[in-house]
Structures are given as C-alpha cells and as structure tokens.
Length: 396
Image (tube, rainbow, N blue to C red):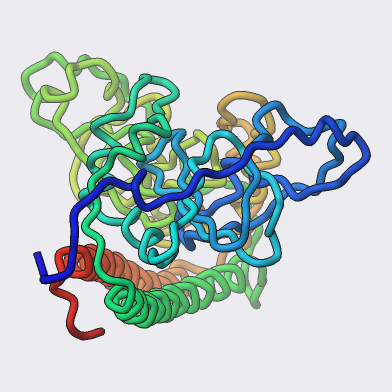
C-alpha cells in the first residue's frame, strides 16, 4: 500500500444519515427514489416519483442530501449505484438503499468508485442472503474494508477515473451508434423489399409457397441420437443464428421430435416479436415450438423466405395473430394466411443476395460491438483495481 494510505472499514468513513416519515405531512410533496430509479448502465438516478406524503410507500423513509452515494442492498449484484444530484437534495429514498454520506476528508466520488470495484461486489455476492429476493444488510456494507488515500490523492484518483470513464462511455456510445446505424440500414432495406410490388410480381398466401414439414420421429432411434436439437431457445433473436446446440442424446431425448434439413427455414412460433428465424446448415430435430418450413422450389427460394420471415411487415402480422396472455404463439392457420408479393425466382435470388450481404455486415458489427464492450468493461475493472491499490498513475 502506498505511503499515507490506511485500511479501515466503510462505516468508519461515513456519517450517520437521517430517516423521515413523509406520511406525517400528508400534503407535502417530495421526490421519491425507489430501487428501480437507478440505472445500472449509467450509474445515475434516471427518474423519480413526485408524491404527496399521504401516499408515501412504507419504504420511503430515508432522507438524502446532495452528494450522498446510494447503493441498492436488494439484489446488490445488479450494481445499482448513484450519486444524489443537487436537484434531489433533501428528498427521500427507499430503505432498499444504503445511504453513504462521506465524513470530512473523504471525497464522495471516491466512495462511489469504490462501490464499483470487483472486491466490493464479490463481497456483496458472497454475503447476500435469500434465494428469490437476495439482499445484504446495511451492516454488511459498513463492515467492508476500504483502503483510503489522503484527500489530495483521492481527488487526483477521482479526476483520473472521471476522465477515463467519460472516455469509455463515449467509446461505448460510438460503437453502439455504428451498430444501430447498420441495423437501421438493414431493417430499412428489408422493409422496402417486402412492402413494394414490382412489374410481374404476384401476390400469394404463405401457404401457397411453403409448407410445415412435421415428420415425427422417435429420437431414441440410433440414427437420430447424434443429430442436433433446435428449440425456440436455441435461435438467437433477430440474428438468424443458432446457439447452444446439443445433440438429441445430450438433450435427454425429450424435445426434438420433428425432422428438418438444410433446405428448410426454421421459424419459432413463440413470441413472434423476437424474430427467431434461422437457416439450418445441416439436418436435425426440432421441438414443437418451431415450425420447419419447406419452401416450394418453384415458388420461393429458401433465402427469400428467410428474409421475409425476418421482415417487419411479416412480424407485425404475426404479432396481431398471437395476442394472448402468457406466451403468445403463432398458429399455422394465421401463418399461412399471410399475403406476400413475389418477384420471379431470379429476382428473389438477387434480392436475397443483397439482403444477405447487409445482414452479414450487421452481424460483423454486432460481434465487434460485443468485443468492444467486453474490452471496455475489462478496462474499467483494471482502472478501478489500480485506483484502490494505489497504482493509478495515468488516464487512458
């Protein structure tokens, strides 16, 4: 540990905070910060409720002041941490928060960053209790060890972290914007294709250009044991990708019962707004939650059918026919009533090739975005570790 630093516990660097009872002033209005008010993405209070004392929730009991740091003790690993801004001075937060108010000589943002460290969050994960509603106590938070630097050093560290984290937020926003732009371009082109009708195009119902092949097999038979199984959960939303595949043998012989092959398109009938559609690369078995659609080769190409099922035009139609409580599903009658305008097969192939190219670029940017996010998250962890071990000497 660097010279001048000391190790103590959080409780020793905090002052006692106040409680309040808004119901004692029934007509007085206040801003209420509940547990859902803090975003664990931005680490800021996103919104509050303006309430009168007479309708104050029983949890609205903690008075907060500007520069207090809030930490949600309910489901602590969700990392709902924020600094109270000036505009919420003397307002009220839920008892689901532990309120950290720094003693003189302690920078409040030094505490704010400390709560984001892996050491602190690991301790919270270890100490939380309750299976369905995990939580830690205020005492658990107070007892956590913290290495405290002299105030000038705290301010230097906070300044470096503020600058670095602002840069990270900008890099993340730029990566996200690039991905959104690529997705918007793809969606726009997709929508334009399936809302137009060119010369020679013909209108047909989906049931006239493809069929659901539902060849039921016994997955316990030897020839099917090593085929992959696809259920709705194995299709990644809006990407056309298969994930977490297992063979029928690994799956336990319980779900995959319908044969499909690489000439088909698999469409998940559950929650159509998720756009779970995929072109399998090899034969396999699918569950009853997935429609294996076989295109009629003289009517529609497989690739054109895939993009049609991914389009907003089709998705909006599917959603309308699946409005039910619980788990909405698209039944085959509604599916096959969908009307589509089709060009000839040559034009379908050309259109699908353009859409495939845009789709691949979108997927490439999505992969880069995920990698960028992982790298930025690792950088944040590294900077926080350096900051609270006295090793932070420069910004990014």
